[in-house]
Length: 471
Image 1 (cartoon, rainbow, N blue to C red):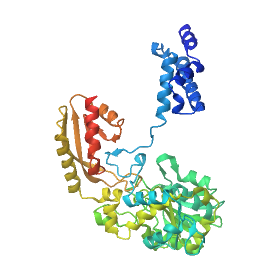
Image 2 (image 1 turned 180 degrees about the horizontal axis):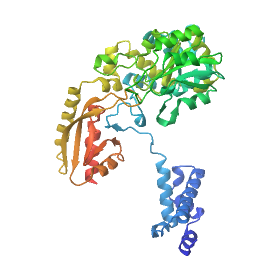
Image 3 (image 1 turned 60 degrees about the vertical axis):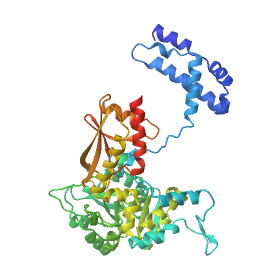
Image 4 (image 1 turned 180 degrees about the vertical axis):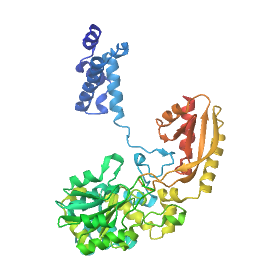
């Protein structure tokens, strides 16, 4: 270690010195002594690590005195009072943006969360019989009515749903799956690895682009516990392709007394063809075809809270409910409350496309999106931003969240040019304001995709642009 580093390490303040300064500033009004002391240690250790590990010559400002360190400790503790999970404006045009929380909840879902959360509830209490009940009963009737299922179960996400079904129906047995359906989606969720964790042996059949019924028939044997169909989620194989129909797999399952599972993932409850979108298999379609169990997400095309929903035949769901893993994967009262309110909108499918924000963004006519874009530009122009120029652009939005991967959804963008700041810098600053705005960048323009921006979010955009242009 060179002499400069040794000297800087010697000059780092002692923890007691920093604590003495902070005590005079009434730091214990903000946090208990243990927290303050640990924060002091962390700040000093970070400085020490920077000195020791820096590859180049160290800047003089790293030679921090006790007062400087105390100020950093105070700022760090104040930072504990600032929420990390925050509201953002999604101006990307990716409707079910996984990184931005996927589907926003409808007002009724939020109301139900508050109502159920602020008091006691009948989460697992049957009000009619006056005895313990099952939490799933609050939504199972709705799910059965909307999908045609005999019974339903809800866990914390669709990966958990797949894991639970596999572990129940095919533990220490084989699950037959097409090679072209061994998917990986965001967060490194891989079907083969989920199978391994569920103690199920993967039996892959066919090829990446062609899997016939005969491939499944040859693979089924005495060790087969499940025939599994997997929605390809965020990709499609096109061209020279072939796949076995779900009806033929159901018949094979019946002939060999093997349950058939369909992991649909996206959770579509309505016919998207009616809105000019590509066909997405609905849960009702799959169950009507005779599938024993279907799994899907609550926060994708369904437009509700994060949840993994399992629906199907009563005898199959009953086995899954008894799996000890079910308790580890179960959902809480807030998810149930939000899911129940979301599902109620589907009793009137037309209303669902108006009331559920994600579904509305998918199905909204592009003319309405354009009108909203024009309204935003008019609002921005009234502010007289000297350095900004606003224009309309036509483009395509995306469903996101592993839903409708090849669907191009026409949209309208509000493009912003800043003569005093590069677009990349604007994008960075917009991410760091009080209500962050997550936008797209193309060359020298910031792009606000109006398919994912609501009218009541205009104020955030206006104020955000004011903030970053005045800095």
